[in-house]
Image 1 (cartoon, rainbow, N blue to C red):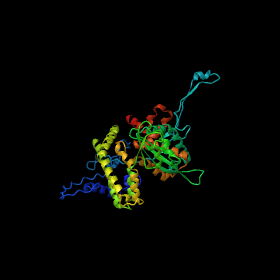
Image 2: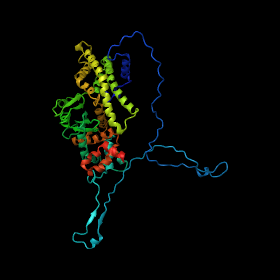
Image 3: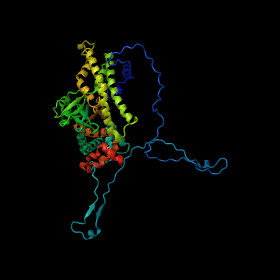
Image 4: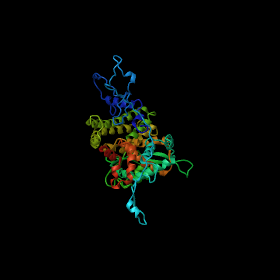
Length: 507
């Protein structure tokens, strides 16, 4: 969690082992009870077979096209060596290899047939014969050179595969096509403009959520008025299970106006939950200044990170604090395991995803009340006892003292998650959504302008929502860019990634 998830801080798994050991020992959250005599442990079960898949040969997907290559005997090998008669084919042996064909460019010629009446042409009036010409489908970019497939390729390459445009320019040059990166930048801008109605619909969907996860990340922005880049901001707003979209917003800075503007009026009709870090820009939202009733939900991943980063100054306190937090996550793991058991350990089918999420919420709430609430009470008592103001050994200005102060200051918000099964224990959903920007930023380095930031926000939103629903972003964008110009606005929801995917599955 030193970055965005648990694997970064696991190390050799010492904290996981510590948590299990302290639970078995019985003093992770209380003193170890005295025992009169040791109880002999039962014999260890035989080791489970390894579940690692290794690097063995895997079955090639059956839905890929096959190209049959027949290998025959040479003519002089076909006669039988015993009698000299020609041998007959009695069967075949088939093996498969996975091959790759480089992408290729092609030119679409739009041929519009023109019709005229020959009979009227001979006796035409001054206006000449009446000619009718077939209509051409509307294009996402009017009179643009790029077809939807090429537009989708450029968008996916930069905003999903993190290729900077100068590198994409070189790739296209290998196909003998010279397309300037400035042209591709214009294509991305115009595509985002064509997709803006869909993006606005996604925003409205997310703002209908009961729970929103949010976080932000910086990005360098070129500014012709300045000798160097300035810092802009991308914000992500992750909708709940009934509004499953990840929406990105770009702002020119990190002022509170960004979230205050986006969340204006959210929660005016009913109570909502905003899961975020401790950034002060959200305080006005919690205070109702944005016009809604919004409850703060803090992130245990952030809290854990504070103790992990302070471990070098006080390893004993850090180890015990991490063990407490591990117990809280064990409750979450137990709830997930119970839901997976309902589906025999496999992921719930798409048709059952809603049921699985509702079941998970109910089980989480029950387990949190029974197990997490007592752990939290003991954890708080222990934290307070470690502070120097209570006679403990931890000085307030030490790294560990600051970690303890952070958690106690956020304590009420850190405990909100146990009151509702729809709430997550941490904000990793938002942090993981921002990871695609963090990775891409290392490649394309900066946004060319504020307008470029807004373009990126639209395209990142569609790409991230495709990833959330395991939708191929290229196939999705190519199809949507082909259709959106002529698609009825009252049926725009059909083009949202999850509904588009379901419609494709039914055809």
